[in-house]
Structures are given as structure tokens and as C-alpha cells.
Length: 212
Image 1: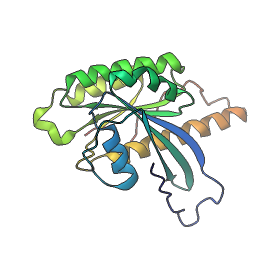
Image 2: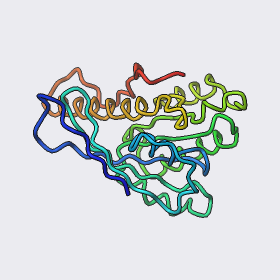
Image 3: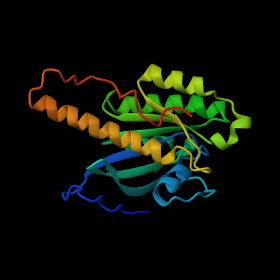
């Protein structure tokens, strides 16, 4: 279990950061654990398949706001699939990961999304589709356009990344953090009676991490 805590930025808030549960979903060997280790520890490891679920925490700063991610790295093997559904409950966000060099993992990611939506109402969770392993671009089986089109059709954030090369990893988690805070602010405004705020507004399409 990794529990690194970020330092508070100068002039930042002194209150406890808000806690958000984030789950990593996808087939085995797509690099979910590698993404988590790169983000949490800035390390790359060739990791054995996760058994059950691994847990990490990290404090994230977005401007003067802070939040704490509780990151649940679920096992991708089929034999753990039914157990992983238990970790969907109470999730605020999800990284839906596939391997760009494996068409099968991309199709399986779509099934993982259906499984998530069967447990949680659509729109209640911030979901980012992540095409991992851009370092294997010569072996690519899923184009950027295919990933983006699927993400757009489901209202998901999207990026491609490489845990090995440390490409777009931090940016992916940061975009999810920004979207979570944006939605929280929108709900707070609605509770104050702001008629211009729409509860069903989809994810912010200008996330800087999107694209290659």
C-alpha cells in the first residue's frame, strides 16, 4: 500500500482535502498498476498481475483547491471479475484502461464500462478512457481516432498515455481531479439556486490531457 502525501502549496487551503474514490478498470496486462505506480511514486515497474485489488492514496492540488484520491487498482483477470464489482460502489471517478497494441483489451474496456454503468447511474462518475502503452506505437491495433470516438459517444474524457515513458500519466489524473472539482462546484451553485447551472451537463470537453 502506497500512501504518499503531497505538500500544501503556498497560500493553499488549510482545511482537510476532500476525498474522492477512483477505480482503475480494464483487462489484465493493460498497465493499470504501472499507471498507478508511475503516478504515485514516479516509478515504472514490470508488475505481476494484481490479485484482487491494490490500494493507494495521493493528495492532489488543483489551483488553491486540494483533494485526496483513494485509488483502487482492480484485478483484470476474468476469475476476479465478479469480485471487482464490489469496488465500484461509492466510486466518484474511474480510469478505464486499454492497451493500444491490443484490440481485445479495447473491446474488453467497453464491457468494463457497461459493468460500471450497471452498478452506478451514468453521469454520477467521472470516467476517463486511457489508451496505455503508446511506447508500443509500432504494434498499435487501436487508433487514436477509435479511442476518441468511443469516448465521445459515451461522454468520457480521453487520453493516450505511457506509464513506461511517463507520458500523459499525471495529466490524466489531473484532468479527472479538475472535472471532479468542477462538478462539485456546479452542484454547490445549484444548491444556492443558480438557475444557469445544469445538473446533467456532461464532462468538460477541454481537458488539456486529451489527445496524444
